[in-house]
Image (tube, rainbow, N blue to C red; front, top):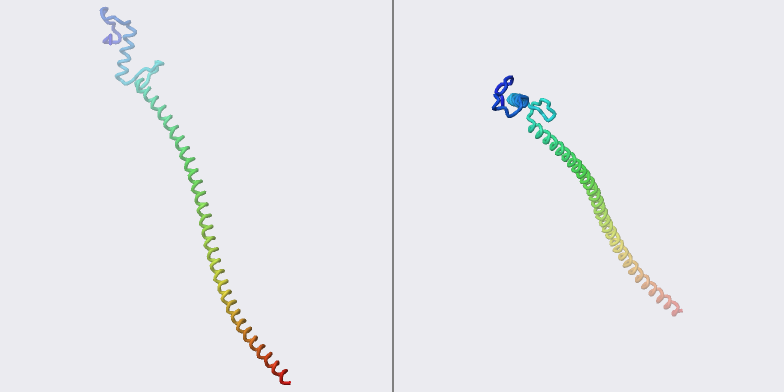
Length: 157
């Protein structure tokens, strides 16, 4: 400070600055002690201009950070939607595969049952064929006996 008191003038030998400048600097010192400051537009502020500038920068950085977080949340949200859609599609395909597998199992069981039925039918038909063969042989024998009897009857006459 160049002047010890606001209302007094400085001795002539210390007068390197005009008195108005000295008063302004002294007022700034007193206001600074009271933690009051002037900004670049000479408005009275509570915050130190450096702190106000840092606060403004921090606010801008925070806004940018919040914007980035919002964009990140959008991206994550769309990613989650995509993953949910893929999970649903995978679940649908899984259900289709399970249904196809069950269908194949039931078809295999049906074929096995049908094969057993056909095998039983073949066995039954073989037995019937054997009965018919035996009956045929029996009838052939009876026919041969009757033909022999007829031949003998005709020869006796």
